[in-house]
Structures are given as C-alpha cells and as structure tokens.
Length: 237
Image 1 (cartoon, rainbow, N blue to C red):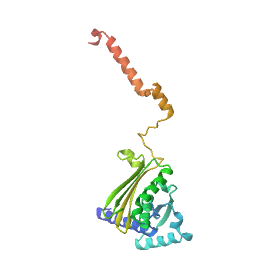
Image 2 (image 1 turned 180 degrees about the horizontal axis):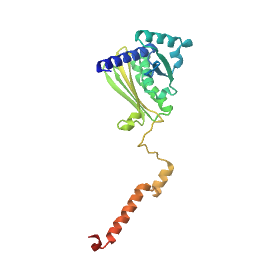
Image 3 (image 1 turned 60 degrees about the vertical axis):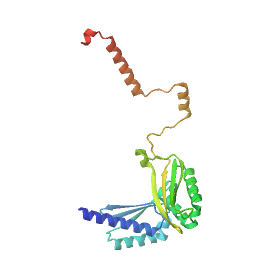
Image 4 (image 1 turned 135 degrees about the vertical axis):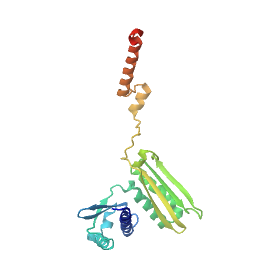
C-alpha cells in the first residue's frame, strides 16, 4: 500500500468513525475501534449505555450496519458493543457529560457542574481527577478554569496510565472546551510508596533494613578492601 492509498484509507476510516459517533450521539460513546478481519470489518463501540445503542430488538444496530455497508462500501461490517462497567473512570464520557450539562443548564452553572462530576469521580474511588474548562463561561471574556482533586501524574511513563479526553460545548456565548484527566484506582504506578503503620514504626525505631542485594554488595566490597589492606607490599607488587 503506497502513501497516497494509505492516506485515503485512513481518511475513510476516520470519516466512518465520525459518522458512527455523530449518529449515536454525544455522551453515549467513549471510543470507536475498527478491526479488519478475513470475514469483514469489525466496528467495536465502547459505551456505558448499550441498550440505547442497540435499540429495540437491535433496530438501530441493523440500520447503522446497512448504512455503513452502502455509504463506505464495506464488504461485511459487524458492529460489536463493549460495555463500560465504570463510566466514572472514563474521561471521554465525563467530558461529554460536562459538555451536555453546559448546553442544558448554561454557562453560569459551570462551577456546580464541574464540582459535581469531580465529587462523583472521587467517591467512586479514583486516585485523582482534573477538569479544565475554557471559554466565555462566567462572562463575555474568555477565561480558563481548573478543578482538581487527589493525585495525578503529569510527566514520565507513569503519566501514560492517566485517562485523558476532551469535548466541546456549544453554548449561547460560544464554544467552550472541556478537558478531563482521570487516574483510575487500578492504575499501576511504579514509583508509588504506601506509608503503612508498620513502615512508620520501623522508621521510628530504626529497624528498616537495607535491600538484601545492596547489603550483600557492600559487605563483599568491605571484605575485599580489608584483604587488600592486610596484603603485604611485596605480594601486591
């Protein structure tokens, strides 16, 4: 596949994803993934509301499948639903929900909306959350606002475990941008240190032992230095 065909192929895939996203509606879909198999195309839709996506007796899915096959010239499209069990930890769903609330209740309620979502996420067990909102929210002058709680990695490899997403809200004063970052409770953080009562007691009483490998190396080096000191000059020359 040459460069021109590859660009056209990815453009077609992007248009297909945007069509599925717009058809199903904002706030219902977290992610759309397309996989190509020998028997056809598999379109995986991640959502926390599978009933609304599927429709009564699968009517919405069937209609969407037929349209994708005719419009995008797909051989055998197959739409699968991936249900999200914890929507509180999905940044895209949270960002879309904030955008919908801004469109529904207006810009003046942006602080209430942000604190409500942040409290709900932290109560669900998240390690940290950050919500950034920008635009003409409280007045006619554009401004950015930040709401944060808990612990959130910003840089390094550990920052890759942070779930991030963004969305836009079309309000009366214009377009407002929303960015959400969530650190789920099951995120693997390599440099995380848990301070337990046992560790506090060991530190206080001086019982914290060195790492066994480090301690063994230090002991070996000390013995070697001692042997060198005890060796007569005639033997070392």
